[in-house]
Amino acid sequence: MSTTPSDNVVWHHATVTRERRERLNGHKSCVLWFTGLSGAGKSTLAHAVEEDLHQLACRTFVLDGDNVRHGLSSNLRFSDADRRENIRRIGEAAKLMMEAGVIAMTAFISPFRADREAVRSLIPHGDFIEIYCKASLTTCESRDIKGLYKKARAGEIKNYTGIDSPYEEPLGAELVVDTDRQSLAESVAAVMALLKERGITTSEGKHE
Image: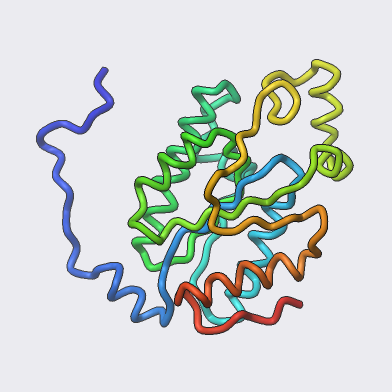
């Protein structure tokens, strides 16, 4: 069965545009793509940034790895092919949210550089902001409340990123947050400062 659109599928151009939605919201939209090893602090940082943005009356949504696996990607496993498909779906969903005027945030390991670059290519230039949550494997394992690294090292989980499946670090991330050394407040402040610098928001938030 073909996965390409048929000739009868035509893109519908709405009269309510992204620009009009942004004016209504009072801020620009974008995609913040948090990437890093499991335990690097992606979800924690994304949700903390969302809280700061919410306090500034910004429209936001966080697409979180575990949550998406319960619904949008519930039929996918953890093979390389399924991971690529998972990231493709998230990229398309984040793009739709951005078009809706939302600051869309994603918190996924997204281990493969090519997959992240494929999502970047979906998004207009400058609207995809890759944020690398950098932390050593030792640190990530120390934060492993689910015990997944331990199971991976014992061979109970296969293809686990950082153990028997690679994580390819970003080469040109818009922001690198060193969660080994930076506090959560410092990391949030760095993200918020970048958003202000890019004109997406007009304030850097509270970072409390």
